[in-house]
Length: 177
Image 1 (cartoon, rainbow, N blue to C red):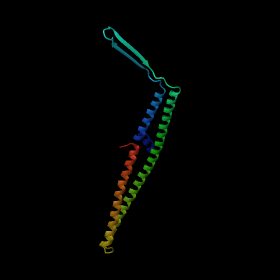
Image 2 (spheres, one colour):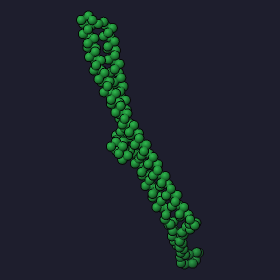
Image 3 (tube, helix red, strand yellow):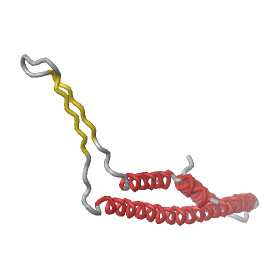
Image 4 (cartoon, helix red, strand yellow):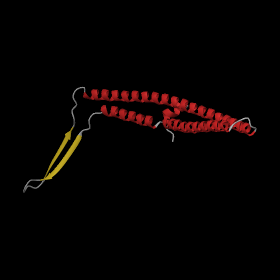
């Protein structure tokens, strides 16, 4: 489903598809005959003569033999080129979307494991403090447990930041804000 959304909403792909429309328009234009030009001019008569001089002209471009066909074939090749580029970019977006989704899942799993570890470290710290109160532990044991908990919490914050980063990249690929 994510790949379908990415292929539909990705702004880069949408822009490329518009290029395909432009290439198709060039193909249509290449098959047309050049437009003729029609000109008309009116001037007053020379010196003492009364009257008006008028001219008209009709101009049209003569194409060399095979030129129109060559233009159509070149435009057709451009359409095929653009469509092939779009297809390649679609495959790339689909692959990057799948990879990014796996990265999001891995980050979520890592964060979940770090949260579980933090909960276990908190319980271990509470246990070490109780042992210290009854005389079975030392202040060094308490400090070590607190340090372990602080490291896990730091890793947890880092994992949260990483998760947000990979989610933003996935949203960018999907064309979502």
